[in-house]
Length: 214
Ligand code: DX5
Ligand code: ZN
Image (cartoon, rainbow, N blue to C red):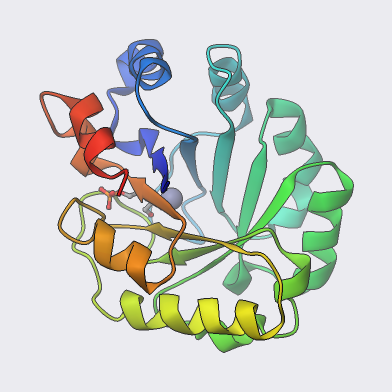
């Protein structure tokens, strides 16, 4: 069954505890947390203090997506805050292999995210070391943008690279995900879907989450 990871970016920040309680009761598998620094992306969100408070409210894994420059400086801190999966952007890491190894050494699952323009072939020599690839299907920075169609093609190519090497890999898609593209993404090779505005923009967010379990 598809892993569904609602993004709290589109939740009401003044009522985060309510949003987390709703997710606890829903079919959501992971909580997707978008950390932005105003440098790697043109927006700023939240960091470790908020994440550690969220951690106390849920038993579901925290899927932390770092959209920050020099993420290697903060790996221990995100680990302590409660990240279960820690994803860094390939474009933000000069020594991506070293950063991935460090994330795993700390006991977290290691994810690497690629912007829409970054070819999946970049990960050919690293794929056997990583647990998860997060393919951005919008340009990172904001919720509510429209899905980039080339993502299907990238998903297929990423899955082919992992299969060629016989390595298990979770492929997660982030940006503009709805019930309209979920099935096609899973058919292309995706395992996990992030959804922000599609989930939190609805009167019945739990039903929206269920609709992504394709
Ligand atoms: C965007 C973030 C996403 C965002 C997705 O940079 O990485 O996780 O919350 O939002 P939607 O689902 O609205 O595109
Ligand atoms: Zn994200």
